[in-house]
Image (cartoon, rainbow, N blue to C red; front, side, top):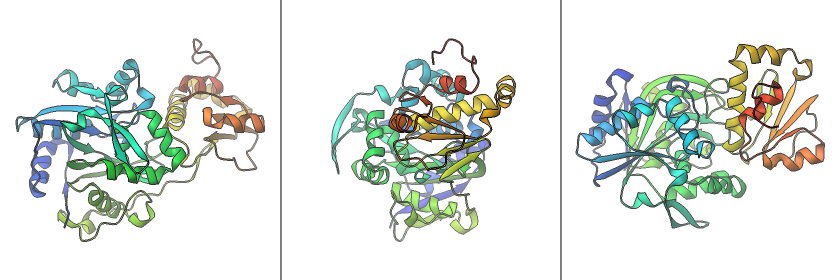
Length: 377
């Protein structure tokens, strides 16, 4: 019978709560080297809910260090694959403190050495360091536009190079995520439930909404942990295609009923005046993250927001991403983003911002000409 621990917490007592939670579920590290894999998807402040909170990751790192283990952090994010971009991500998400002041190495898994491991679709390239490190999964508690929720099982996509993650969207996103959970499973999954995201995740404002929960959820059975998290979120696990129900899960600590707080469901068509965004599970983060980053830049920069508002032709904008056919009525200003939408752009004669990923600065320039004068259209 798998057990999953639930504990209420707060930022000022994370260290003691992490230790108490892991004692509660009876977890003890086996290997001398520990790999912590948080969820870092956006260069956003911790209170936005996009990323695993750095204080949670720090508390887990200190837990292992106090037990004499060598700790490294690792994440793969194709949007931030270069050294310069990855540095920006760590700085914005609050992780430079862990590397520069605590001396915890942070590895960009986009550049990691890999080894082929058998899985449902032949073989899959996983980080070679998983062979010698005890792998700890540190996801967040969030909803997701394409997968309903993003928890431990979904967080494992960050182990993969971007070309493999693109394959997931073409082959079948849910089936591939589930197959990955059969190919590799962490020794421990600990979910950060401090600043969560509800509505149209996996990113917070201006798209999703921040939901404060102040929870930690942990277990050694990743699928059981995700099952418990869906119950806390008020989501039917059977409606999440990449998950499967786990029978007879023993919840320790807080009762699920006492911490349950239904999350707003993601919308399939996103409407943020004046934008309507059409997206499905064939669209990967290589398009969605740059677009929402561009919107955040426009909406939060007074000069750009004013410039945008002075263009009457932008009062109704339709954004198309991915290869799927668009709806028939797109309104007066449709725009295609990313290489997967190139065929739609040609067929429909729609303006197109190319790239895989498209440069968010090009998107900003499209709406606010001259915002980045050094970026070619």
